[in-house]
Image (cartoon, rainbow, N blue to C red; front, side, top):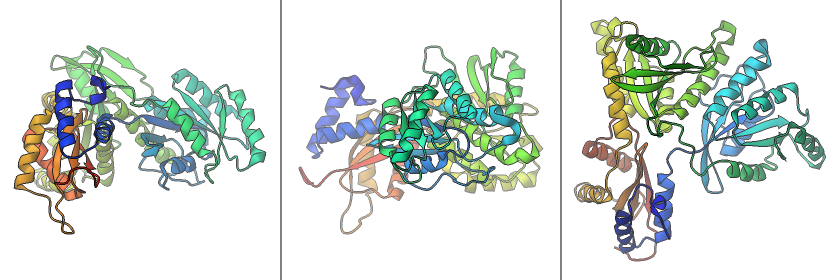
Length: 482
């Protein structure tokens, strides 16, 4: 009944052996298959929520993710730290990119709405287009429709602010946009959101399109990310100019990320630069918001995130948020400490202390100390990227993993809680890019013990430069008891 594709990263023989082990430990075959499939899916599909300002996008995002997290404020210019959220509907998980939040009349329709929508659509597998049904289709809505058509992504049309039967007729007029059936909803009261999300799931792929270089001969994609003015463009220019083999340059406007094919160390790489936002003092908040959105879009398209840290400044909360975004997205990671040549001995001493305390969450990432300006240690960038990619793609055979887990359980059993001692019974690696493990246990494993397992996995198998995802399935109170 199962073919190779249903086994996640397991081959047929390994799968059969694994299922026999699961059966011996009292796990139901369907439960085990479901756990492997869920853990092995990899990156979640991405839904972009787009539309002109003040149509209720952020309120709808809050409704979809089930908590009040996206900023909802009438005032334009609201700065937000996060633009991507995780949601679940009908047992399926997906990411939501919220493009609501700030309005900007000064630059007009093209600059404000298009810039927000373009970044989000770029990263998305499907789009949710939100229109205010009480106002009807405006010129700005029409402009967004053109963008959506050009992108060719699947679209679901939400007619928002339909609070009762009387609003249904207003929603029906939105058929005129030519995007198919308008789904009447009230993001404020939750009316109609279930039907809307059912339709969204039909448009989203079970697993997202692999937007990175899996094609034969396709260049590996690298996103340069970091807070504004950290030296992303300088680094890209230095890398490109030193080798003088920029093969191609796409979308080099102030609004779009620049993709450059660059040969380094005899290999062609595709660099996605997330810098170059139009800077105007009175638009600073908007620029920061675009920076978050554009960084999220670049990371979604990349395989490796090279995170630049400005060593002449203290490691900031903003640096931490960017690191968290890259880790949560499951990309391979390299940390590049820029402007290293500008440090005196005292700053270098204090920076090393900061790195020890502030960068613990990515202590496993390869580190390079560079200068984008002078080109110092640029030759170390490619080996670091290759190391991170190798870790990202590492696969541990199930037999070897279970021998390792057996040793850990024997030497470092889980602490006894409530008179019981939960035990890891067996596990498997369900996928790579990043490595994803599913452990089957006799009881709940505490977060501290999971972190201990991750640390030991890294010590034993490497996994340098990659996040590791560990999910745990607990045996239900049935079957054979040990």
